[in-house]
Length: 330
Image 1 (cartoon, rainbow, N blue to C red):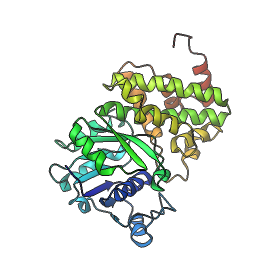
Image 2 (cartoon, rainbow, N blue to C red; image 1 turned 135 degrees about the vertical axis):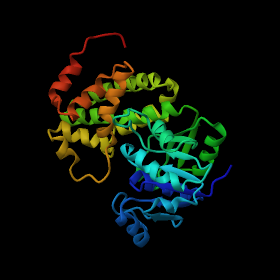
Image 3 (cartoon, helix red, strand yellow; image 1 turned 90 degrees about the horizontal axis):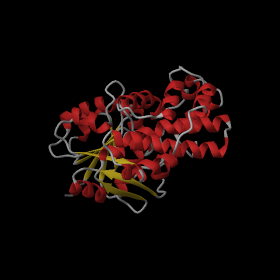
């Protein structure tokens, strides 16, 4: 099983970076963008000036605005914001050739339905083979060719390994795994935890608090992933722990930067002002909280973040609530 023409749905920073990876791997790449100015920028300047400025795109990358431009693709990388995945896949469906697999690269839990991205895609694209790509990977670094690794989760081992072979390059190493639920659960929850770590940094709570948040947050992430049907060993890898450490440790993280602003005293509206890229954790936090409650999983850090974002509690009260929790065994 080989692939020659990759279509990328969503031309944000991560979608554009993945288009670069696929082109460097030898694939012809068509990048679909909702924004006409992005299509024009790529055509005229060979650069996505809106979402990934300063990166010259590979010659094999072309951009289109209509899903019809993906009709000849034999591999799809789906990278829309998580809350728009359903509508994006519904728009793609009429143009998807039979047998073409879709790799989900969006991280989150759908609001309302509380469904993971694979469940959303399965409803929008019945019968289509689905894989998940997730791991510690800042788009700018990947696009510039700095080394990164990720999990490529697919229940069909032969298909998963074929996709790995198709997109792997020396500086981007995907590792196949069978556990798609674990892979996507890790990616969804870590964005919420990154907001918590940003709040801690913004409040100046120190490195001890930061380390504790990552560690206890990872425990929450693992509990929720397992309750949803994933495996603890999956989230102990790149798509869980690896992604969590990266996202919670740098202001390059869109989610952590939102937390930093909240910790410094800004409102959510102020924290989001002027951002062109989506901080997935803001939209996913209420859905993660609701999903955890529906599965009877205790997630106090995610609960606190969701409460802060919803205006139910202020930052100081949320911190006090976490510090006042009953002591118990780790």
